[in-house]
Image 1 (cartoon, rainbow, N blue to C red):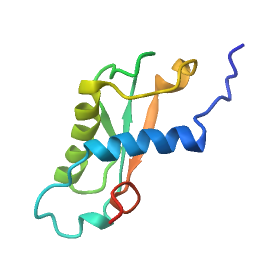
Image 2: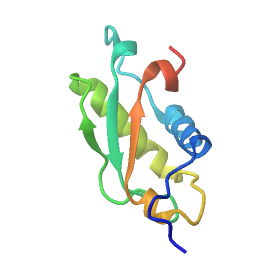
Image 3: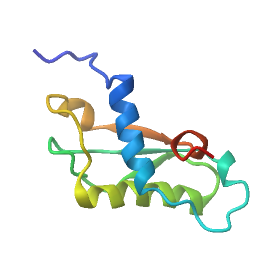
Length: 106
């Protein structure tokens, strides 16, 4: 019973953002980085492993900042992201907004 309108719950998205925040390091010495926001799009397989390379969907306008968010996804992928089972169709195409104020508490 696949529900085409199925989405990640707020708590599932929060858990994913929390994991990614733990893997994210802002570029050293980047002025005003707390004001940047980037949207990264990536695909996961059913086990939570990255399928392909993460891509910047909406740039912050700063290449260093954007690349730091992409690296966070890749770094978390080393151990695998903890994702709930049964939602593989959703995990196949994920977009995460990397906002340091929300994910890192800046």
